Image (tube, rainbow, N blue to C red):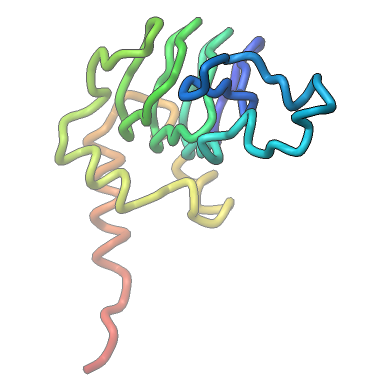
Amino acid sequence: YTSIAEGVKILLGGEHRTDWITTYPFPAMVEQVSDIQDYAPSKGDVVIGSDCWICANAVIVSGVTIGHGAIVGAGAMVVRDVAPYSVVGGNPCKFIRWRFEEDVRDLLLRAAWWDWPMEEVKSVARTLCSSDMDAFLAYIRQRQASVKQPAN
C-alpha cells in the first residue's frame, strides 16, 4: 500500500569513500589496486514502510528507513531515517510536520491495517478513503476489543 511516484531513485550502493585521500573509485578502474574491497560501500538496505507516499523525483540513499505512513516531498534528498507518519521534504530532507497527533500515530501503528486480510481492508476502504479519523479509530478500537485474550 505504498505509492512511489515517477522519477524516484533509490541508491543502494556506490557511496564514495570520504575517509580516503581521494574519493575516486580507483579499484574499479585501475588493475594495480583492483584487490581493494569495499571501495564503494553501501550503508545498508533501504526500507520503506507501508502506506507511504514517495513523491516525484525523490532520492533515497542507502541505509535509510522510511516509517509507515510517511510522506516524502517531491525532489527530496533523503539521507536520514524518516519517522512514521511524518511529512518531510527538501535537500537535504527535513521534517516539515506530523500527519496526525502522537496518540493517533501510535494507534495506527499498532493497528497496522496494511497487514489485515484483504477482505477486511476492502470492508473499511470507504473510511480509509476519507478524513473521518474518528470513525476509523472507533473501528480499530472495536476490532481490538473483539480479539480474544489468551486464557491464563
